[in-house]
Image (cartoon, rainbow, N blue to C red; front, side):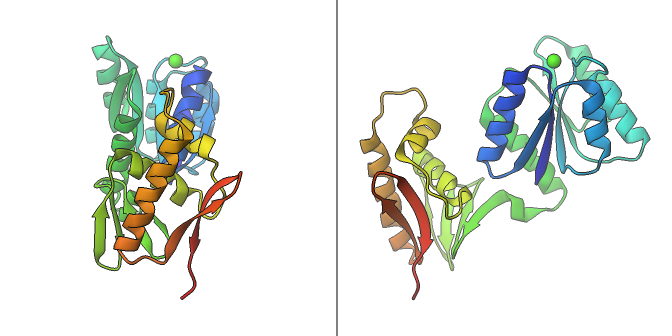
Amino acid sequence: MNILVVEDERNLADAIVHIVSDASYGAEAVYDGRSGLRAALSGNYDAIVLDVMLPGMNGCEIVHEMRRQGVATPVLMLTARTSTAEKVEGLDAGADDYMTKPFEADELLARLRAFTRRRGDVMLDEVTFGDIRLDLATHDLSHDGDSVHLSGKEFEVMRILMSSSSKVVSKQDLLGRVWGDTDASENSVEAYVSFLRKKLAHIGSSVQITTLRMLGYRLEVLEA
Ligand code: CA
């Protein structure tokens, strides 16, 4: 799943790219209306997050032009909180959904997932690695009929490890991405990795979380 982000506030555009990439989707940002239309018409994207107020050409004009040219890519419009007119205009122009700024990462991802469900693309609701599957909606980790529910932080840690495939993820990186600005320490990361190891063993998976001293963690598939 490849997402186009069209938003002229660079910080917000880059934050959205980050959120979407963290959820294992591909994402690219462009920062003005004309580049947005050009990218949207390329047909290279599965969904578009489109701001209304843009230099060059506004979001409503972009979606109107896309639809006129027969491009059916789902569009999620970003609108200012106060502007009902923007929402109506966006939907009238052919947007599929809208979201008011500011918004939470989870809300953005839920709306993008709803697009993929509408397309019947069930594979995109989960991340897989080796013999395990992590359901992004229910937070269930499963292997061959056995499944176990992951708590919020267990889920975040596991999702990051699984979407990094076999690349090493440092404790510091996990700490920043999962715990944010709290005063949690690397001990918390170690504790959660230990919970996850127990859960992986519990469902009988051959995937293990390997510790690389001084570097961090990575997922490996144990050979039988
Ligand atoms: Ca804007």
